[in-house]
Every structure is written in C-alpha cells, then in structure tokens.
Image (cartoon, rainbow, N blue to C red):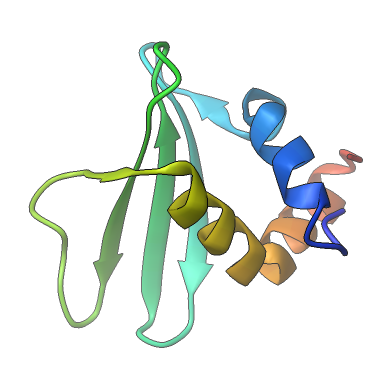
Length: 93
C-alpha cells in the first residue's frame, strides 16, 4: 500500500511485481474519473517509463516519455486506485 510519499519509490523500484507483462514491456492500467477513461503506465526493459491516456475526451496518439519526477507525481496522484488494485490482487508492498 502507498500511504506515504516515500513509499512511491519502493513501488517504482518493484513496478514489475504489480504490473502485467505483454511480452515486451510491463504495464499498469489505471482507471481515471475526470475525464472517464484509462491511464496506462509502461516500463520497458531498459528501465524507461512511458504513459498513454485514453478517455472520453481524447486519446494520446503515442506513448509519452516520463522522467522520474513525473512518474512519482503520477503514482502519488493515483495511489488510491493503485492501492485498490493491490487489495484486489491481495499483493502487499
């Protein structure tokens, strides 16, 4: 569970534990409320993170690269959704 900001780093370091593998990259899809849709965070074998948004207003044309600060901000902002996913999967940090 991510309850404190300093736990975001641990989640990122163990991203593969919580994400799905599509054969090439790990990905974690999160539901968004406003606008209604999804945000998918991806991690490639070289350690690079990207994201893609798909919702009722727009779709990103391509994946967008993320730096560590942006990734941390997104993980922190979506901690409630991530924690719900962890609870549903009975996985613990």
